[in-house]
Amino acid sequence: MVEITRDVVIVGAGAAGTTAANELKKAGLSVVVLEARDRVGGRLWTDVVDGAMLEIGGQWVSPDQEALKETISELGLETYRRYREGDSVYIGRDGERRRFTGEIFPVAPETEKEIVRLIDVLDDMVAQVDPDRPWEHPDAEALDRVSFEAWLEEQTGDQEARDNIALFIAGAMLTKPAYAFSALQALLMAASAGSFTHLVDADYILDERVVGGLQQVPLLLAERLGDDVMLEQPVHTILWDQDGVTVLTDGGLTVRARFAILAHAPILYPWIDFTPALPRLKQQMHQHISMGFVIKVHAVYDRPFWREQGLSGTAFSPYEISHEAYDNTNHGDERGTLVGFVSDRDADDLFRVSAEERKARILESLSHYYGPEALEPLVYFESDWGAEEWTRGAYAASFDLGGLARYGADLRTPVGPIHFACSDMAGAGYQHVDGAIRMGRLVAANIVEAAHR
Ligand code: FAD
Image 1 (cartoon, helix red, strand yellow):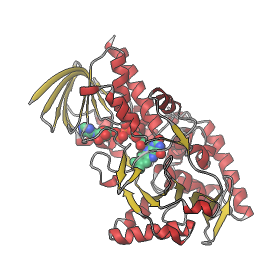
Image 2 (image 1 turned 30 degrees about the vertical axis):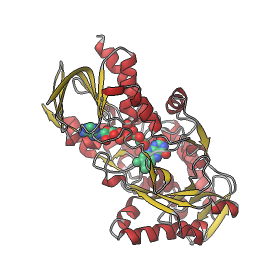
Image 3 (image 1 turned 135 degrees about the vertical axis):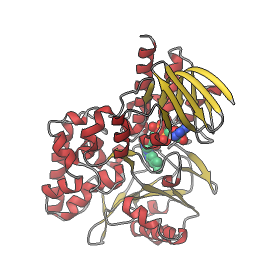
Image 4 (image 1 turned 60 degrees about the vertical axis):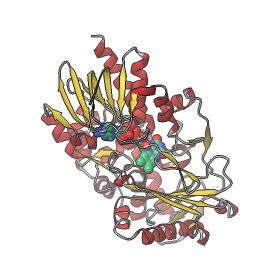
């Protein structure tokens, strides 16, 4: 049994936790970061699988993600642009594969008109939403009672237009079916990226990657903390009162501190035993938050063969198992990598079949976009975050229907000395690394202020 004392104990060495720890240290406070896993980074994980470097977790950086971009540049990391030369591919409701350029999918003219109109409607609504306070929108209550699917049904009778608009938020972002989250939650998702138009524009939202992998961000931040990051220390108990916390880990560590930061997905709070229990509002709220679910699929080939066909690698279809896929070739790599995503119900279904069948069905879907060569990768890997005890889904957590208007304003409110920080409670950068860094900075500033009171 080892006992240590610090000003602040931080639970979780992801982007939020490592950012908060560095900010607190800069302000002269002593910290320790307790991490359950045997590695730093949480949902950022760059690894070599069968000789191929893969971004198992988050990887892309977009122009609006200022906090992440500042951190990348401050850490001396280099970025490169996603490959985007050539035609994109869309597979429509009729099963036809069509090549296109630009952002709007090649659909029938009347469907295209509906898609463009809906993007305008959503952009106007999103402009009225403060991503830090979506519950303050004048129609917040009403928008939070209706599912995004039902809201879209009220807007247009064009099924393919609805399927495409839903895809940008449901399959591609919240990774939940569009009937499982509200229109307000959809507006928050778009507002957190600046506009709905940004979500439609893959070249914007999936703009750059970090040479060597995005996990370097938390790894380098953790390096600055030295021995103050402790791995394999799952926190199971927090005893607290107004003066501070005592935190106990499965690794046999006891930490006493004036403040604690829970820097992990909010769905994991109930796995910690709090004494006294968290206030009833928090206990209720945490039952209305759940993780989305997506399989990120990596397929590495001897060369980026799709480029020879004049394809950018960018591919979409609400009707395919892999609803979106991209050229994910690493910087300076001769081999070609495709990355595809299988979301929510499709992911559930594929985990009901054998690993061989799952692989065959996912590669079949990729071959619909890129042709038969996609069926034979040299390396194949599925990122399965649903099976990870310390994450339990991907990409992130969101409220169920009605939860955002009812509880959202209280999500970040501290409980005595316990503060909360995670990408899943960010405004700008919500569900992204940028949001994790913003929340890490914010909570550190709040603690510094409280410490000097
Ligand atoms: P986490 O990264 O989840 O860190 C929390 C840490 O807390 C973890 O290390 C966990 O092990 C630890 N922990 C949990 N419970 C305990 C406990 N009881 N005791 C001790 N430690 C504990 N974002 C982007 O910006 N761009 C992308 O392209 C992108 N793609 C993604 C693809 C995938 C497959 C996934 C999964 C995510 C993606 N994201 C992306 C989202 C992004 O990775 C996350 O939003 C961000 O990394 C979350 O950081 P965090 O610090 O808030 O939480």
